[in-house]
Image (cartoon, rainbow, N blue to C red):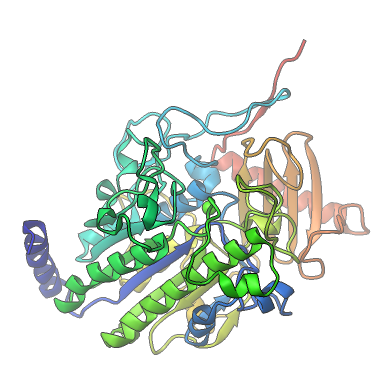
Length: 497
Ligand code: CA
């Protein structure tokens, strides 16, 4: 047994003595760029064509033993979501409002003739203070580790840029790291080309040398490694936290050889079939994790959270060609402030006392995971930790219906994520409260108001309808007040002569 595991074992046995009863295990199972419709489990009231086309039997299996949240939100892009999850802060407060570049001090975002991008935390999050352009915060895995959890990160990390402490999962409180770096996508999904480690591409996936040259998909390799690592805490009865973040379904769009043929046989285009095969691959991984819990008889003491980090990439062509999916009935996709960019699939499986085969329509947001997981673990949020914005969803697993219906959820992307503004992209803020959602274009200083209860697709801007100007004014004031309180980065108009 490696030395570090031995010392960890002693620490855990000590914690077990100290804290008494064994704490529940917790798994985050995060998918990258998975849209609300990329599943055979319908999150809308009606089954869509995509729900009928894609096959995700293990998501359906999870929904039968858990609670599906129909109104769950992440942020429009990768890093802000991941930082919110492990800090408990809203993006408008942590100021990591766009994705972080693999190398430090290279802010992502496009240049604009009219707008000046604000100063934001373009190097991501940091567990150490005074690192330029980072949010200094205590990370969720560090708190769990300090309370006796065996903490594992597997897959995509992307919390911070290389050259800063937050880019290394070990510095965020993880005891084991499998393939997590500062990059937000893999160079390749295929073992036969060494997951991209054939040249100098820094997107090549780390730590998976034993699969080089093999006919194996990255999703499968990560699953095998994650489950192999779980054997140690399970055997030694130590509670574990597994942060399992797949690189799939992010581009590059590369087929999963195991599952593509049936989609080609259905007559789908090459790109559509590739995407569908990646969806089945991640669903198979979910099934393997559920099987592992059953086989080891720990399903009742293990919580599992299935979520995506943002909406599906829909309206912008990928590196591999034309768009191959959409999020309809939701409008737009990844990067957008419309629902297609931020509303995500979320299913949580709890223990025996929690809801099963239940749907919950309370609006919830990614920063809620931080207090939820700590409450599951029975850990009081330490006083030294940053002021968090999330609220625990644990009651939501016990048929909690209306507690948060009227809370305000805020979204903020003051950056130029893509070249053209288009369908809700770039320089936007939004607030959702109850059935209404107000969107603020920071470029034009204009507003849109939608009634999500009656217009899920955000097609009908009702801001001028009778009675609505006052509703819009109320939401505008609340949004601006939250952004000001959080000192949110705001873009400015350039001085053009
Ligand atoms: Ca993403």
